[in-house]
Length: 404
Ligand SMILES: Cc1ncc(COP(=O)(O)O)c(C=O)c1O
Image 1 (cartoon, rainbow, N blue to C red):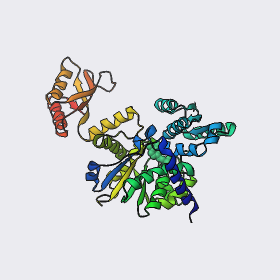
Image 2 (tube, protein in one colour):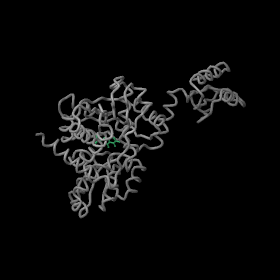
Image 3 (cartoon, rainbow, N blue to C red):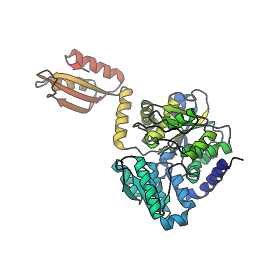
Image 4 (cartoon, helix red, strand yellow):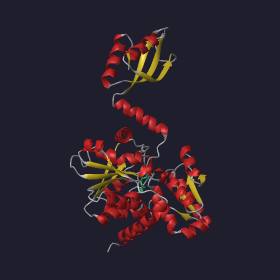
């Protein structure tokens, strides 16, 4: 008998008896567009629609609920700059528990505000997650508050595992599940639940190339630390997986793949355009992997765990503009125009006659490397189609403007 896996499964069953007082059973929606694009039957498990905008509230709620007397007496503490902080803050306030969340001083203000709005005391400390985590340990030691780890904890893993139980009941003949990996709590929980209920299910993890901690660990046959680079998938930029999650993953994860930033951006964009879903980078990893050809054209029933939707609007704006540019519907051009009355008007007339709409424009006549008598104009514009963009550029050149 495998004691840890059995224990986590039992705990997952228990979690499913308590979490729905407060949390949602999220939808598992069939996606016609993504099924057509990948040659599989693609279903989206919409954890972006969970309370707090990610699955994290499941593990946090179950953990705190499992130690309620202690938590009510001493409070709880956690370190995170992301979804875990909101999950712990929300679960605590639902359960009448005082929570203290330590966040790095570099945390974006909207995340700090979101965590405070769920009722937590926020302590800002250090530059990176590790500093905040050490501070959280110190607070836990001094105040005897319970530390809620973001992933390396059997009860947290079990709480996340309720996603797996839901998938099994919503789609009993599921063939494969694709899950993002940060520290490995989510995929461990889902893997345990699904492998118990349907051992033939393939459980596949996805990481960004910016932080391939489990990919490298699996290759090396031991836990391997990495230095994460910045990524759109900022929710999964841990340095390493945990010892508990590593042990569980080695038993329930069939494969792990890595995707690059362009794929992640495209997946976020397509989820918005086709599925009308706002999804953060980490949550878009499974679709990015599918669009890169994972399990392509097999006709299999695949559930993609869309793990969260907490993306800030400036990042979203950049992704949308890039996506539109790739689709040829937005163009960015640099024009060199004579610095004389009417020249800019003439250039913009070409855009206007081709039904293009200017989104952004910047006019600069003081660049040191610019020939005297010329100005640089950076224009971002929307065009009806890629062909129209090409036509506009051609007409601008014919009119004597230099276009880059
Ligand atoms: C949106 C999102 N997806 C996936 C993950 C990865 O979860 P885990 O650390 O349990 O692997 C995280 C982690 O915070 C997350 O915020």
